[in-house]
Image 1 (cartoon, one colour):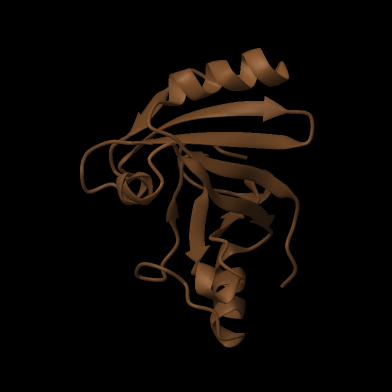
Image 2 (image 1 turned 120 degrees about the vertical axis):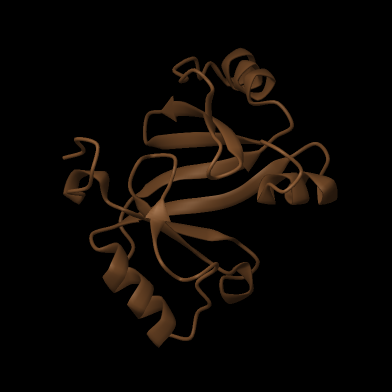
Length: 147
């Protein structure tokens, strides 16, 4: 298994709309989605599109959100994770396990904010960086009319 393209960098923030304005005002990154709540993930998300990837701004929904826990340690927010596309999420998960990495949660892929299956690899295995692997959206044949 090899990593595909960098899809996005996740940035935790207490307010996705305020953070989107900062990216627009400071960096001219004005191509942003409307905020969308993902209650099953415990987050509210805005995607800011830049020429070679997206920035995923992530705000917690509720006290139990993993992003809330991140913000408790980093009140102003900050980089939460990097996400790479993979052609086959199950093969990627199995490769991570075979290589000794810890796949977080149950280890079963689940549908992320892009509408495709994802897994996360523990930061202790990647130099302190939380890595999200996502099924390449162009190759995903899932529910909801995705390609």
